[in-house]
Length: 537
Image (tube, helix red, strand yellow):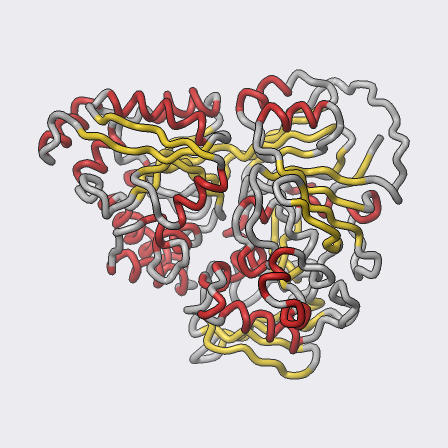
C-alpha cells in the first residue's frame, strides 16, 4: 500500500481529522498600488515575529515564533497540502520524501519513507535515509533534550533503514496524532553539519545546515533573520519564483508592525491585535483574514503547587467568575467561541463538558467561602506586553476582583514571559495556545507527564487522564476513541488542570500585493502557507 504526493487513502485514514473550518476573508475595493521597482532577483518577502528566538536548530523550533517561518529553512518527511477550491487540508509526502507507506503488523506500526532522489542539504550533500535516521535518532536522545522529540519518544520503538533511500520509523502501537505532529514539528537539518560546527554554534547560525527552499544567511539578535533562496532546491514554490530573500523581522509592538505594513516594510502580520485588525479592514492596500473555528485555545495556566490554587473549589470559583462572553467581546470583538474543554467538535462533540461552567459570581463566592477564603486572597498574574496577553490581563483582573481575589499583574517582554511559563515561575497566567484540531494532541503536549512542556501544569497529574489520552491516541476505532476522549475530557473538566475559556479565530493581515496566502487551520501562524505566496504588483 503506497501513498503518493497527491494524498493518501489506506490503512490508517485520518483526513476527516484534519478537516479545515470555513475561511472568512474580508475583501475590499481595490486600491491603486504603485508599481515596485523590485524584480524577482532582488525582491525580499518580509514577515514578522514578536520576540527573539532562542533556537535556530529545528530540534527545538516548536513555538509559534518558529513555526511562523521555519518551513522555509527546513523540510521534513510530511507536510500539508492546501486544496484551495475545497478550503481543505490533507497530509501528504514532505519535500524530503517522494513516497510513503504505513505498514501495520501484529506488534508494531511502521512508517516507511522513500527519500526523494533530488533532495539535498544546503551544503550540497544528498539527503539519504541514513542522514535522516541519524538526525531523528539525535532528536530522540534524552541527553539532547529535544522538545519536539519528547512528543514522540514514547511511541517510537526503533529507527531503521533498508537502503540509501528507504527509512523506517517503528511505533509500538498506532498513534492517531503521529502524522500531524510529524508535519508540524519535524523538519530536519543536516546532522553532519551540526556535528562539525558543534551544537551551540549551529544553534546560533546554522549556515549550510538547512534542507528547505531557503538557506540561512545571517541573524542579528533582536532585529531580524535573513534567508536567501536555495537555487538547487528540488521543488518549485510560488515564493521561490518571486522572492530571492526572506527577512523575518522581530517586531514586538503592535503599532510598529502596523506602521511597517502600511509603509511596505512588512508584507504579512500574523500577530495582529484586534484593534488594528478591525481598523485595517477599511484600508484598501491591506487584506484582513480570519479562520473560524480554529484551535487557538484561550486559557489560563495554573501552578498547582501554589496555595490556594491546589484546591479544586478555588479553581472552579476562578472559572465561574469569568464572564467569557464579556471577555471575548472586550479582547477579540466577539471573534471567539466559548468552550470549557479544548475540543472544536469537528469529530466528536461533548456539549455537557464544553459548556459545563456557567457564569455565576454568587456561586463563585460561595466556592471560595467553602474553601476557607471568604475574604479572598492575593494572586500574582503573569502576563506579556503583547496581544492578547496585554488585553486579557486587566479584564480578568477586574472579573476576579469581583469575588475578592486581589490580582497583581506582572507584565514583561514576551520572551521573559515565556521563560516564566516554561520554568515554571508563575502562579496564574492567561495564554493563547495554538494547536491542532485533533483531540489528544494539544492535551498530550501540555499535560502528559512525558512531555517537556509538563511544567505548564505544574503540580497536576492524573493517572486516569494519562490512561485515557494514551488509549485515545492509539485507538483506530472511532467509537472507542470517542469513549476514551470523553474520559480524558471528563477528568480535565472535573479537575481543571487549566482554565479553558474558549477558542479564538485565527487572524492575519497582509498587503494586497501578496497572493496565495491563507490562514492556517492549525496554528495562528504560517507553517507551510509562506511557501505558497507570490507577488502581484
